[in-house]
Length: 287
Image (cartoon, rainbow, N blue to C red; front, top):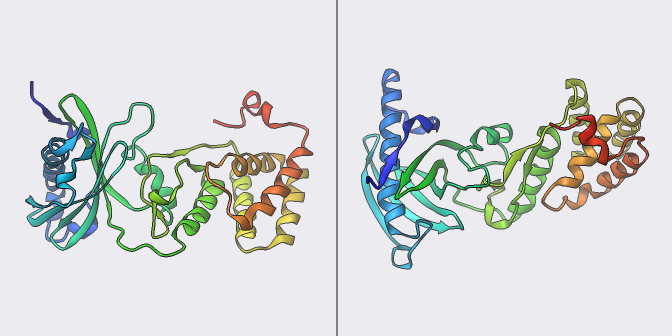
């Protein structure tokens, strides 16, 4: 039985714009297929064969730097960076352009980073940019890979900055990230999207616009304006109160300190509503 198989029909995304120079427009599709085939093979030949049970590269290759077959006609190097529970991160330099290449064993019970690529585009300011990814199979195990921006530096307040951005993305876009810890955040951006999912509430467009205005009031510390809007919402559009209460209390990471007073006032208004959280499902508020 063949140990390595790939399936180009499961490719997501497109080649990074910085790699398209010199490729005629009518040849981009062929170049993309060739690129995906090469990275699939690289994952099988390098990651799977040199890894301990296909997850973590063994110690003797931790410092390895290899020149691999040229990608898109450019000299290419791969360097091992780090490992997690399901896979590893490599620095893939194509020509003079560095990228992060993440290769993970396909999770069985959670959504893969590859499947979450479309969600990250809803909040580009907080999630590291991902370009292209695909799946391959090696020795009956399924793997995913994804090519992302290489984040080199890391500012001092990186975690707090990302946490605040996640707070906004959570309230205004329904994006919920369940793995906000220092290891998954670099330079103010989330670099591991495995814990991301979208949870939507049935609000009208006008109600969502009101939520965005209320979030902006929190962001700019406009306390009086926020109180006026939440008081109006409690009388005219109580679904907004339910929405804010739900998201402010369901987030898997600690609410930034400067927003706690807003969460407290939302909770106070929520307790005055005639319909409580245990009736959400029956009323079909969430989908």
